[in-house]
Image 1: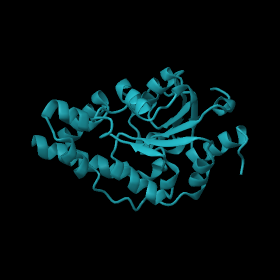
Image 2 (image 1 turned 135 degrees about the vertical axis):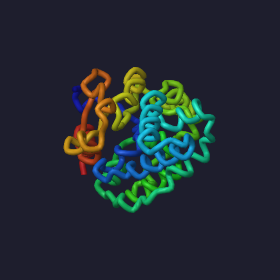
Image 3 (image 1 turned 90 degrees about the horizontal axis):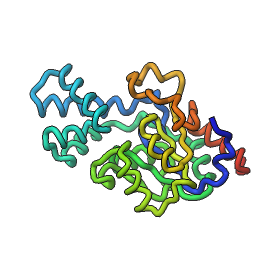
Image 4 (image 1 turned 120 degrees about the vertical axis):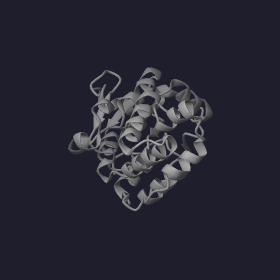
Length: 235
């Protein structure tokens, strides 16, 4: 693991959304997961178990279930995204500590998600952090090509004129940090210890100990506080 002084020259802060900006124990994505399974079941006419297997297979192989459905079944992304993100966001509660920490970070801040702007805005509004971000780069802006595809990071960086060597990326999936690390970003994996075995499939955490993961944090707000103290921006 690198020293926190690696963040001293960072001027752009990039955050994944689901299970990164809000605590994983909320398990908000479980609602999306159920609706994805139901969508696959209706599309294929399969039983719930087979639909779940297909959904997870596409997610693992293509980066998102949507990408697999588009390539294998010609599914309309708009129809899928509207259906799976029609969920109850009330489990997400305001997080003043997180909002304060993000606000005090020097430079620009972005959300980069494989979800939609609409979903991200609802989560950010519930957290009370919406006004801290310059933009939300979603799966539509990525032309439905999800992280961890290198082309998507290139598109995001070019669109926003970001120097990756002066950027930091916060994620909950190790594989989504491989390209950022190769581009020169500081990479932070957010995975609370108490939830790793509860909400994760084993393959999702493959690579957690690899060199492309420079920092691992249990909680985002607390870790940002440590960064702020290191770079001379304490409360």
